[in-house]
Amino acid sequence: MPHAHLLVVDDEPSILTTLQKALTLEGYSVDVAGGVKVADEKLKKRSYDLCLFDVQLPDGDGITLLAQIRAAKNEVPVIMMSGHATIDTAVKATRLGALNFLEKPINTDALLIAVETALRLQRAETEARELRVASGTTGELVGESGPIKKLVEQIARAAKSSASVLVTGERGTGKELVARAIHQLSPRAKGPLEKLNCAALPSELIESELFGHEAGAFTGATKQRRGKFERASGGTLFLDEVGDMPLPMQAKLLRVLQEREIERVGGNETIKVDTRVVAATNRDLVKACESDVFRADLYDRLNVVPLHIPPLRARREDVPLLARHFLELASKANDRPGMRIEEDAIQVLVAYSFPGNVRELRNLTERLVILTPDDVIRAVDVRNCLPGGGSPKAQGLYRPGVPFRVLVEESERQILQDALAHHGGQMAATARALDLERSHLYKKARALGLRGDSKSDEEDAG
Image (cartoon, rainbow, N blue to C red; front, side, top):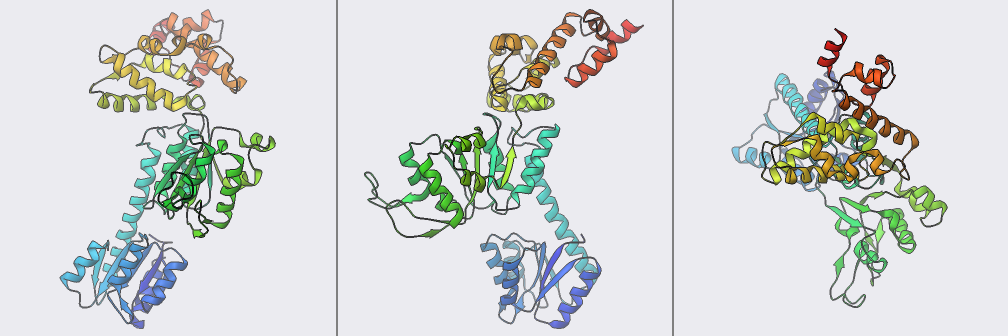
């Protein structure tokens, strides 16, 4: 795979020259090192796509070097090389994660095949991790809509850095899921992921939770305790509902983000931390800054990489996929295998606004699995479980915070859905009843994700 950056470590200059030339001719970028010390320095300065280590080196051995980089949580693919390898050596290298073992003298064709295979395997593993997030194996990121695909791409890009991320979105959209995905796709994936809900704790306890405390720091502090920042060092700290953090704590959080060091409550020792922060809120922090209830400088520190999760009503085309996904999960969890949902029931779900977003859809699906008497979920079952039967009229046409465009779209969808149901799904009859051009009705229904009965339309046209 050309354009990859490789590091070759060997103590024989002639072998380094030969391997570097062969790999460079194939389009790879190649660095070389003659020993463990130089290799270690190069590995600390940059990341590589693949390393080739000789077993015997003048200042150590390749097995030890491999063990060191694995201990440092560097998962770069490694191929070992040796002119006098033993089975014991090969077993040690394999246990440490070496992908291949090449015997010297190195055959060029075998070398290139081994390198290409290792790089393809690494790329496949990376794509598999990203696919797990994109396909939503944990649930709420399921979707084929433009907004969700864009979000998944942004998550993958954001994960590669260590910059702070601010995730915004309404309640129930899956902000914690996004934080978890960022961590899992990042170089910190093998490190800890800690979480703190800033709205769930009294202000006097947040500092201790974040920074820890020394024994005797306050009443009840009988022993030393590490805080979230310290425990998450080398990994990620998710600060949920960060918009509800008290102002005094905002100043202390800002200092930690700037200095990358903490002091436990009741202590005076400065502790360095390497913790990435992903924060989330459903509040408008810009307005909060204007109202002086949230620090503008902290907002700037947190908002280095902004990610916004769209509400479910903005990606209605994902509702059928999500509903069927949650139906499968709920059926297994409640020992009701084989349950299915009819298309008319799906359309009722699509028409509903879901103010609680994906969380509400998941809970509703489980409720349907539990309460539906037989193995088929129909439209009437869904309406019976929705507030006011699921109609926009029963919910109230106006809802604070929902754009006019969305409210109109919801009303149009409900009107067309009811009209199509009244006329047996016949587009032509529905268009006549609504005094609409049939082509306009087709276009409008398609835009709103509704379908009529094509067979009935053909008969009507005939």
